[in-house]
Image (cartoon, rainbow, N blue to C red; front, side):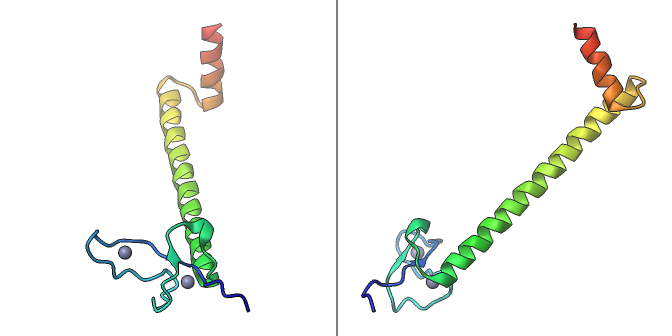
Amino acid sequence: MSAAKTMHYLDHYCGPQECDCVPICHGRLTDPAHTSDQQRVTCKTCLNTLATRRAKAFAASEASKIAYKAELYDEVWSLATSHGFTNVTDAIMAAAKGKS
Ligand SMILES: [Zn+2]
Ligand SMILES: [Zn+2]
């Protein structure tokens, strides 16, 4: 077996004076090898948790992007209909013609 210690991932939520943070795998810190540098983490449980976090953050950002697009579309839609258009494409075509 290699002597390399398992690196756990640790988020420091603590103040500068005291640290009672635990690694995200909730392993006890009898093994002091922990890092907040994700590149150096070797603990599988920590890595899994990090991957899940990233996936969740990604899903959340995608969901908010879609919500934002839907909001924008609603804006454009109400703008188009307020100018008497029955669909957004017609409104954009008319705007493009007006420009040229
Ligand atoms: Zn760990
Ligand atoms: Zn800490």
